[in-house]
Amino acid sequence: MIRVRAILGALVVACLVSACGPWQRAAEAWRARDGGSRPYATLEGTRWAWRSAIQGPDVISVTQPDRYTVEFQNEHRISVRADCNRGQGAWSAKLDTMTIGPMAYTRVACAAGSLSRMFVKALENTRLWYVREGALFLELPDGRGVLRFELVDASVS
Image 1: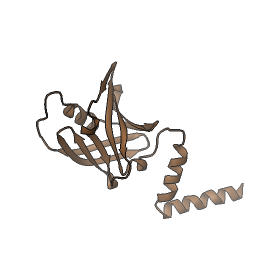
Image 2: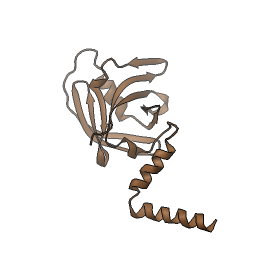
Image 3: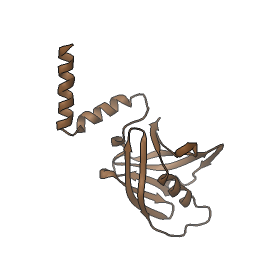
Image 4: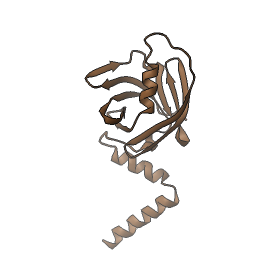
């Protein structure tokens, strides 16, 4: 028992000294092996395309997901494509909570039928997140909706 405590203590110290880099990623991979939520560090360097939204009983399918993307960059930066507009800003996450914003967007008038405004508003209201079966889900507060994303690229930075 003393040996186990000594090993755990050494791991904690090693994690603190090394800023938890490799240790944290290994722990994340182990915890996520069942397809459940992953800590936010796994989002850094990934780009996701918006596939659908659930708002109450309604499901909205996105017919052009490549026009609605989020890219989680390093140092808590985020890049967004919202149809004909682009945005840059900040993101942060802790466990299953997420905050996106403040954001700065271009203000181009998109074609009729664009989901740009709805997409931007939903992103900025995101409160919870999780990854399940390879898809990213962003939840709005008070059960107002869920956005579902598909991984496009895991090597962006």
